[in-house]
Image (cartoon, rainbow, N blue to C red):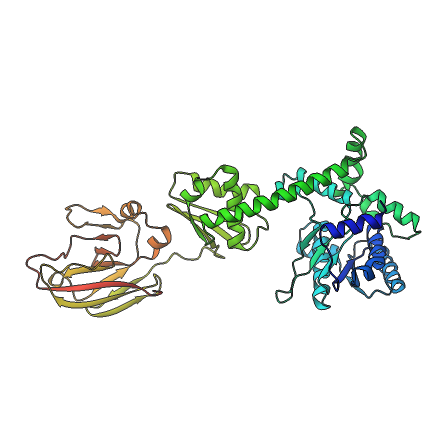
Length: 473
């Protein structure tokens, strides 16, 4: 089969184009991109496509890079295709940033440029010249980096390209040459007498991909046969297809776990370990928006927090997130920029009226009334005190280390911290929960504990009723 026929089959197989599509061709001037440019210019009328061309000068090769741009511009003019050029200085960007992988930075700038041009000129597809050998190299590269099934699926023939402008519709990235070998492409260029540029940096074996291309793959071919890239590309396709099926199953399972920023440990523990990993990744992606920077170790750390016996745990995750366990619940929260000062407040609670406590997001409402033996608090958000046992004003403050109180019906005192542990009070609630005091004596811990001090009884004539209300309710 000719290269043109193979490209037609690939376009049909993955439904890459529809009549009327605007397609931006990413052309570097190298063999693959020049074959892509030539083939797409021949097929544009057949598929009813509008073509444009984009070329990015990375600033790595100086004058040679500018000659590449000139060469591509001349080819675009010859074929009657509009061209968009941009030049960046990757070495300077890396120097100013202080770190970074030059190859990864170049890829990010290139795709960002493509997406920007596509969005600006209404082009819904971006086509690149990646071939089957690139696919095999990608699979090996991710294998050596310890990637999972998704990474081993290599480069999808069609995927959404993220736009830098949130207001723009993201174009689709397509790879029409993805099922053609590098040798087939070189043969096509020779047969049609097509010129191309050679990037000498591609011969440098220090980058992992170049080492795989020039060292590892030739050794594998020598030990096996010349079709190893074809088999690896087929494996990548199988893994991508299986990953799509597993993804559907995982996201269906996520409905049971819950897509909110909190899930219960027992819901995850019912699944097998492999399913747990996939569910954690899907849950993180659903709540954090992406999985950028999330590694196998992060997922294992999440599972460790879920399976450990400790009722509390906290780990940092990429993107400024923290995963927090509070008893049987696991939450994803935004990490604070700094530790800051611990919350510490103290207010005077008047005999009548209300007191708003912004630190806790609540208010306390006080009222005086006569007492009868049948009178009881409505729920644990309300407390009744014998008014004769109270001073003119009470104190309301949050928890302090060493706090103790005398539980209702007991003679001795109990640590408030022990009460919090017994009641499984989440740590953030402990820090801000208002405690009602008479002097230094804790009278009431709303929702969790009532003191024996100032309790109502047969001699009570008048009571102070205190009710807690949440401000967001």
